[in-house]
Image (tube, rainbow, N blue to C red; front, side):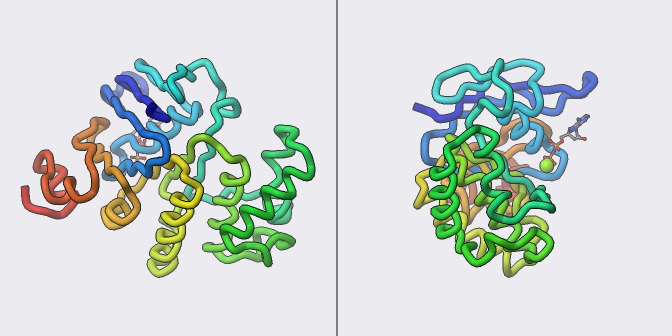
Length: 238
Ligand code: ADP
Ligand code: MG
Protein backbone atom coordinates (compact mmCIF):
# COMPACT_ATOMS: atom_id res chain seq x y z
CA UNK A 1 0.00 0.00 0.00
CA UNK A 2 1.13 3.55 -0.64
CA UNK A 3 2.23 5.24 2.54
CA UNK A 4 1.10 8.57 1.12
CA UNK A 5 -1.54 9.07 -1.52
CA UNK A 6 -2.19 12.55 -2.90
CA UNK A 7 -5.39 12.80 -4.88
CA UNK A 8 -5.82 15.77 -7.22
CA UNK A 9 -4.49 18.34 -4.79
CA UNK A 10 -4.99 21.94 -5.90
CA UNK A 11 -4.15 25.07 -3.99
CA UNK A 12 -4.76 28.74 -4.69
CA UNK A 13 -3.69 31.75 -2.69
CA UNK A 14 -6.20 34.57 -3.26
CA UNK A 15 -7.43 33.01 -6.53
CA UNK A 16 -3.85 32.60 -7.69
CA UNK A 17 -3.31 28.88 -8.47
CA UNK A 18 -0.09 27.50 -6.96
CA UNK A 19 -0.72 23.74 -7.19
CA UNK A 20 -2.80 22.14 -9.93
CA UNK A 21 -4.19 18.61 -9.75
CA UNK A 22 -1.26 16.99 -7.99
CA UNK A 23 -1.75 13.21 -7.82
CA UNK A 24 1.06 11.14 -6.43
CA UNK A 25 1.55 7.84 -4.62
CA UNK A 26 4.54 7.43 -2.36
CA UNK A 27 5.28 3.80 -1.48
CA UNK A 28 6.35 2.64 1.94
CA UNK A 29 10.12 2.89 2.47
CA UNK A 30 10.80 5.00 -0.62
CA UNK A 31 12.90 8.11 -1.00
CA UNK A 32 10.93 10.53 -3.17
CA UNK A 33 12.34 13.82 -4.40
CA UNK A 34 10.19 16.82 -5.26
CA UNK A 35 12.38 18.75 -7.68
CA UNK A 36 11.61 22.08 -9.32
CA UNK A 37 12.59 25.72 -9.62
CA UNK A 38 11.98 28.26 -6.87
CA UNK A 39 8.31 29.24 -6.60
CA UNK A 40 6.92 26.11 -8.32
CA UNK A 41 4.97 25.07 -5.20
CA UNK A 42 7.21 22.47 -3.51
CA UNK A 43 7.06 23.93 -0.01
CA UNK A 44 3.33 24.51 -0.28
CA UNK A 45 2.82 20.85 -1.17
CA UNK A 46 4.93 19.67 1.80
CA UNK A 47 3.03 22.00 4.12
CA UNK A 48 -0.27 20.58 2.89
CA UNK A 49 0.97 17.01 3.53
CA UNK A 50 2.10 18.05 7.03
CA UNK A 51 -1.23 19.77 7.71
CA UNK A 52 0.34 23.22 8.11
CA UNK A 53 -1.64 24.51 5.16
CA UNK A 54 -4.97 23.35 3.76
CA UNK A 55 -5.55 22.49 0.14
CA UNK A 56 -8.24 24.21 -1.93
CA UNK A 57 -9.38 20.81 -3.25
CA UNK A 58 -8.26 17.19 -3.28
CA UNK A 59 -7.33 14.71 -0.56
CA UNK A 60 -4.30 13.61 1.42
CA UNK A 61 -4.33 9.95 2.48
CA UNK A 62 -1.78 8.36 4.78
CA UNK A 63 -1.90 4.57 5.03
CA UNK A 64 -5.18 4.71 3.15
CA UNK A 65 -6.81 7.08 5.63
CA UNK A 66 -7.96 10.58 4.79
CA UNK A 67 -6.06 12.88 7.18
CA UNK A 68 -7.64 16.16 6.17
CA UNK A 69 -9.36 16.57 9.53
CA UNK A 70 -6.15 15.81 11.49
CA UNK A 71 -4.01 18.65 12.88
CA UNK A 72 -0.22 18.47 12.22
CA UNK A 73 0.54 16.99 15.65
CA UNK A 74 -1.68 13.98 14.95
CA UNK A 75 -0.36 13.12 11.48
CA UNK A 76 2.68 11.12 12.59
CA UNK A 77 4.91 13.16 10.29
CA UNK A 78 8.23 14.83 11.10
CA UNK A 79 9.43 17.77 9.05
CA UNK A 80 13.00 19.10 8.75
CA UNK A 81 13.47 22.61 7.37
CA UNK A 82 16.33 24.64 6.01
CA UNK A 83 16.31 26.76 9.16
CA UNK A 84 17.22 24.46 11.99
CA UNK A 85 14.68 25.94 14.41
CA UNK A 86 16.36 24.43 17.47
CA UNK A 87 15.40 25.86 20.86
CA UNK A 88 18.41 28.07 21.70
CA UNK A 89 17.99 27.88 25.49
CA UNK A 90 17.83 24.07 25.55
CA UNK A 91 20.72 21.62 25.30
CA UNK A 92 20.90 19.21 22.37
CA UNK A 93 19.56 16.44 24.61
CA UNK A 94 16.62 18.62 25.68
CA UNK A 95 15.98 19.62 22.08
CA UNK A 96 15.77 15.96 21.13
CA UNK A 97 13.50 15.17 24.09
CA UNK A 98 11.16 18.12 23.64
CA UNK A 99 8.53 16.71 21.25
CA UNK A 100 8.54 13.37 23.07
CA UNK A 101 7.90 15.01 26.44
CA UNK A 102 5.02 16.94 24.89
CA UNK A 103 3.59 13.60 23.78
CA UNK A 104 4.09 12.14 27.28
CA UNK A 105 6.45 9.43 26.07
CA UNK A 106 7.88 7.65 29.17
CA UNK A 107 11.22 8.96 30.45
CA UNK A 108 13.23 5.78 29.84
CA UNK A 109 11.85 5.42 26.29
CA UNK A 110 12.96 9.00 25.64
CA UNK A 111 16.46 8.20 26.91
CA UNK A 112 16.69 5.08 24.72
CA UNK A 113 15.50 6.89 21.61
CA UNK A 114 17.94 9.76 22.16
CA UNK A 115 20.80 7.31 22.60
CA UNK A 116 19.84 5.48 19.38
CA UNK A 117 19.48 8.68 17.34
CA UNK A 118 22.70 10.13 18.76
CA UNK A 119 24.58 7.01 17.73
CA UNK A 120 23.06 6.95 14.24
CA UNK A 121 23.94 10.59 13.67
CA UNK A 122 27.23 10.53 15.54
CA UNK A 123 26.25 13.37 17.89
CA UNK A 124 26.83 11.70 21.29
CA UNK A 125 29.57 14.20 22.24
CA UNK A 126 27.21 17.11 21.55
CA UNK A 127 24.29 16.13 23.77
CA UNK A 128 25.07 18.57 26.58
CA UNK A 129 25.91 21.52 24.34
CA UNK A 130 23.65 24.42 23.42
CA UNK A 131 22.81 25.10 19.74
CA UNK A 132 25.00 28.24 19.69
CA UNK A 133 28.05 26.05 20.38
CA UNK A 134 27.45 23.86 17.29
CA UNK A 135 28.54 24.23 13.67
CA UNK A 136 25.98 24.43 10.86
CA UNK A 137 26.42 20.76 10.00
CA UNK A 138 26.09 19.72 13.63
CA UNK A 139 22.89 21.75 14.00
CA UNK A 140 21.44 20.10 10.93
CA UNK A 141 22.27 16.68 12.42
CA UNK A 142 20.46 17.64 15.62
CA UNK A 143 17.48 18.80 13.56
CA UNK A 144 17.43 15.38 11.89
CA UNK A 145 17.79 13.73 15.30
CA UNK A 146 14.70 15.55 16.48
CA UNK A 147 12.77 14.02 13.60
CA UNK A 148 14.22 10.52 14.10
CA UNK A 149 13.46 10.22 17.84
CA UNK A 150 9.77 10.59 17.06
CA UNK A 151 9.84 7.50 14.81
CA UNK A 152 7.32 9.07 12.44
CA UNK A 153 5.58 7.27 9.59
CA UNK A 154 6.76 9.90 7.17
CA UNK A 155 9.72 12.27 7.03
CA UNK A 156 9.40 15.52 5.09
CA UNK A 157 12.52 17.51 4.24
CA UNK A 158 12.36 21.03 2.83
CA UNK A 159 15.77 21.86 1.32
CA UNK A 160 17.46 20.89 4.61
CA UNK A 161 21.03 21.17 3.32
CA UNK A 162 20.84 24.36 1.29
CA UNK A 163 22.43 26.53 4.01
CA UNK A 164 25.52 24.31 4.25
CA UNK A 165 28.72 24.67 2.24
CA UNK A 166 29.22 22.42 -0.79
CA UNK A 167 31.54 19.90 0.85
CA UNK A 168 29.37 19.43 3.92
CA UNK A 169 26.29 19.19 1.72
CA UNK A 170 27.84 16.29 -0.19
CA UNK A 171 28.77 14.35 2.94
CA UNK A 172 25.39 15.00 4.63
CA UNK A 173 23.66 13.79 1.49
CA UNK A 174 25.51 10.48 1.62
CA UNK A 175 24.72 10.11 5.31
CA UNK A 176 21.07 10.89 4.82
CA UNK A 177 20.78 8.24 2.12
CA UNK A 178 22.41 5.65 4.43
CA UNK A 179 20.14 6.71 7.25
CA UNK A 180 17.05 6.25 5.12
CA UNK A 181 18.17 2.77 4.12
CA UNK A 182 18.97 1.80 7.69
CA UNK A 183 15.68 3.11 9.08
CA UNK A 184 13.72 1.83 6.06
CA UNK A 185 11.90 5.12 6.41
CA UNK A 186 9.60 6.82 3.94
CA UNK A 187 11.09 10.18 3.05
CA UNK A 188 9.96 13.03 0.83
CA UNK A 189 12.67 15.50 0.08
CA UNK A 190 12.23 18.90 -1.57
CA UNK A 191 15.08 20.45 -3.52
CA UNK A 192 15.81 22.67 -6.50
CA UNK A 193 19.24 21.00 -6.85
CA UNK A 194 19.39 18.45 -9.69
CA UNK A 195 22.52 16.71 -8.39
CA UNK A 196 20.95 16.28 -4.98
CA UNK A 197 17.84 14.84 -6.60
CA UNK A 198 19.78 12.39 -8.75
CA UNK A 199 21.97 11.10 -5.91
CA UNK A 200 19.30 10.81 -3.20
CA UNK A 201 16.11 9.79 -4.91
CA UNK A 202 14.53 6.43 -5.72
CA UNK A 203 12.05 8.53 -7.59
CA UNK A 204 12.11 12.11 -8.82
CA UNK A 205 8.94 14.13 -9.16
CA UNK A 206 9.62 17.15 -11.36
CA UNK A 207 7.27 20.06 -10.67
CA UNK A 208 6.89 23.25 -12.64
CA UNK A 209 4.22 25.91 -12.33
CA UNK A 210 2.37 23.84 -9.72
CA UNK A 211 2.05 20.80 -11.98
CA UNK A 212 3.83 17.45 -12.03
CA UNK A 213 5.79 17.22 -15.27
CA UNK A 214 7.32 13.80 -14.69
CA UNK A 215 7.50 11.22 -11.88
CA UNK A 216 10.11 8.58 -12.62
CA UNK A 217 13.27 6.92 -11.35
CA UNK A 218 16.44 9.04 -11.70
CA UNK A 219 17.81 7.08 -14.67
CA UNK A 220 14.65 7.41 -16.71
CA UNK A 221 14.22 11.07 -15.79
CA UNK A 222 17.71 11.67 -17.09
CA UNK A 223 17.56 9.41 -20.15
CA UNK A 224 13.96 10.02 -21.16
CA UNK A 225 12.74 13.44 -20.01
CA UNK A 226 8.99 13.77 -20.53
CA UNK A 227 9.12 17.27 -22.03
CA UNK A 228 11.52 20.10 -22.89
CA UNK A 229 11.16 21.65 -19.43
CA UNK A 230 12.31 18.46 -17.68
CA UNK A 231 15.08 18.04 -20.22
CA UNK A 232 16.45 21.55 -19.71
CA UNK A 233 16.01 21.44 -15.94
CA UNK A 234 17.77 18.09 -15.57
CA UNK A 235 20.35 19.18 -18.11
CA UNK A 236 19.87 16.75 -20.97
CA UNK A 237 18.67 17.39 -24.52
CA UNK A 238 14.99 16.50 -25.16
P1 ADP B 1 8.83 26.61 -3.70
O1 ADP B 1 8.94 25.98 -2.35
O2 ADP B 1 8.80 25.64 -4.81
O3 ADP B 1 9.90 27.64 -3.91
P2 ADP B 1 6.40 27.75 -2.63
O4 ADP B 1 5.51 26.59 -2.36
O5 ADP B 1 7.09 28.35 -1.47
O6 ADP B 1 7.44 27.39 -3.78
O7 ADP B 1 5.55 28.90 -3.31
C1 ADP B 1 4.80 28.68 -4.48
C2 ADP B 1 4.06 29.97 -4.84
O8 ADP B 1 3.06 30.24 -3.87
C3 ADP B 1 4.95 31.20 -4.89
O9 ADP B 1 4.52 32.01 -5.95
C4 ADP B 1 4.68 31.87 -3.57
O10 ADP B 1 4.87 33.25 -3.67
C5 ADP B 1 3.23 31.52 -3.31
N1 ADP B 1 2.90 31.43 -1.87
C6 ADP B 1 3.44 30.54 -0.99
N2 ADP B 1 2.92 30.70 0.23
C7 ADP B 1 2.03 31.73 0.13
C8 ADP B 1 1.14 32.38 1.05
N3 ADP B 1 1.07 32.00 2.34
N4 ADP B 1 0.37 33.39 0.58
C9 ADP B 1 0.43 33.77 -0.72
N5 ADP B 1 1.22 33.20 -1.64
C10 ADP B 1 2.02 32.19 -1.23
MG1 MG C 1 10.37 26.21 -0.87
